[in-house]
Length: 148
Image (cartoon, rainbow, N blue to C red; front, side, top):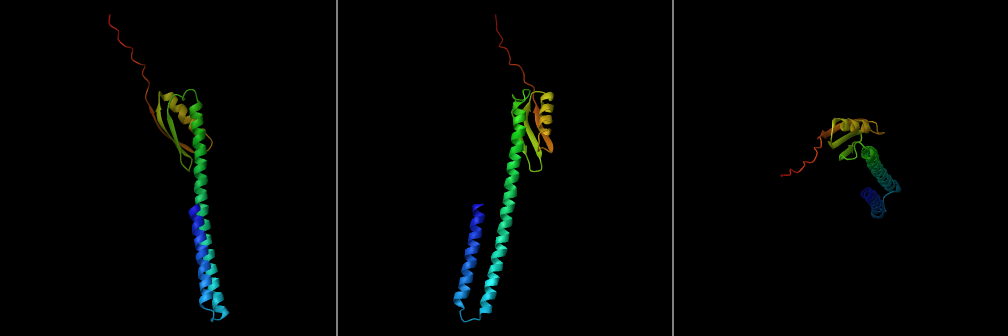
């Protein structure tokens, strides 16, 4: 956004310099010629301001969408993290602008996988779920063999 402000300021400064140069260099021309150049400069300023405004609007929309997606991802993560059946698993969440949530990670069984998908799907702001969870049952730690 600061770059856009500099572009606008540069455009306005350039237009002002052009207008002042036109008036300063051609004092002998009739006022109508000077007026036409000033009008042309003003039209140029309006066009550049409109372009800058559109660029700012697009950046704002992108930023707003990114913040919304972070909020949706945080809601999904919170639901998965606070669910007792899932809080021991590392599950990552990524949400795109169209509401598609992708969950990745490893869970211990098919029930945990289904629970994670269901919780994600039921979260406000999620349109669909891409399930990239891997089921890897945890094996009990091997007991050391003791010899008599």
